[in-house]
Length: 249
Ligand code: NAD
Image (cartoon, rainbow, N blue to C red; front, side):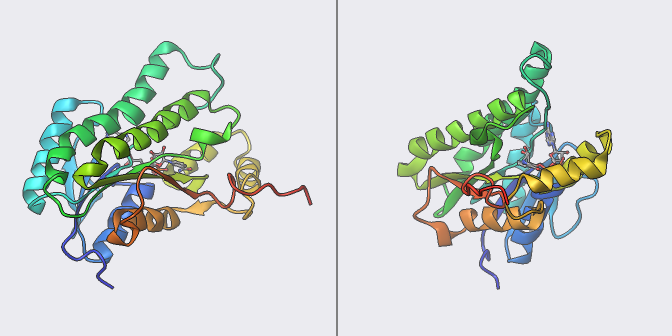
């Protein structure tokens, strides 16, 4: 199935986890895909790789321009680069708050700013942001991360409103806990990784972690003309975490 034939996509944070699964899926379905990442060394053909740090405006502008030139334009931007943080408001200092917002929020803004002029020339432009169930769920020990993803959610709505008349749709996915290298690092750092994994699995009604491929599938749907009437909304990919209210067994 070549649903994405003729579509030119840029995926930030596309070298690992959800971003890599998304880039691979879009390319498998016929899109031309460029990856923007801090470390794109493991990215190979047919994906195009561009090194950039989303906290550095000049490097983002250069990479987006180079990607759009290489692809001959841009139809889809997946704003996925992000980092995590744990703790309550007492646990992270100002510097840590600035560091996480610089990547998760301003990184998205910088990339969108650089990509919008290219997306305006597309007849089916879409921006899909990787948000999180943390944006709306009230998770413990995730104050800073949740606030950053809350901003991503608000930006999704605001950007959708600003660009709808230009024909640019803006949506986001809200994953639960996804089995990616990031979560692997989190588990490795836990005092009891197996117990921590079991706790993360139990948080999701499906009783298992979400796969990166499942998030990629949702992003691909939101990026495709199949979702042409969908903008300014979030798609949960969280094993029922947000929507279901199961009674304890
Ligand atoms: P990951 O660590 O496997 O991949 C993240 C990628 O982003 C890496 O390739 C990394 O190099 C890149 N990156 C990080 N900082 C960057 C920067 N400053 N500039 C450019 N690239 C940068 O993580 P993942 O689990 O695939 O997470 C991807 C996105 O999904 C993040 O936005 C994260 O908040 C979101 N998310 C993850 C989960 C989860 O449980 N894994 C759940 C909800 C949302």
